[in-house]
Length: 177
Image (cartoon, rainbow, N blue to C red; front, side, top):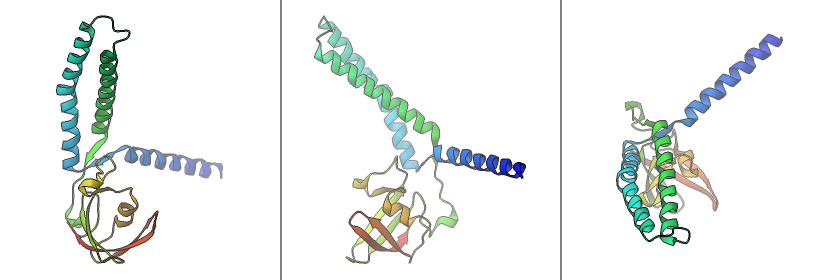
């Protein structure tokens, strides 16, 4: 009996570890991956040099104890280096999304979805992306957002209900690209 409990406990731990490994992956579209790589390259090649030049110039003014330009440049340097580290971690965890033929009509990460709001009869279009790529101004919504969560796995013609702070919205999926 104890052996069964121990075996079950080990299986649960293995499932948790597997879940963490999968959870640690950062799913990205090709555009999202390129955007992160471009930002990292820009920070390493352009911004680092600009900040180093600013620090040199500020030091040339003499005493750095009360030098606002020096403090500002050092603060920006710390921010840039922190962002570079964050991007490196994200890129190490990145896994490129590849759309399969089976996903042609199902809402998956990377899909562009046309929705009809059944209450207002307005049409909306969103691309479902990971949280790292989400940008509402570009109509890119996170798969973890209320709308994103509700759409995943559905297909053309399905009606979905989305719980939002203002209540519940009803949508019909018109198209999936």
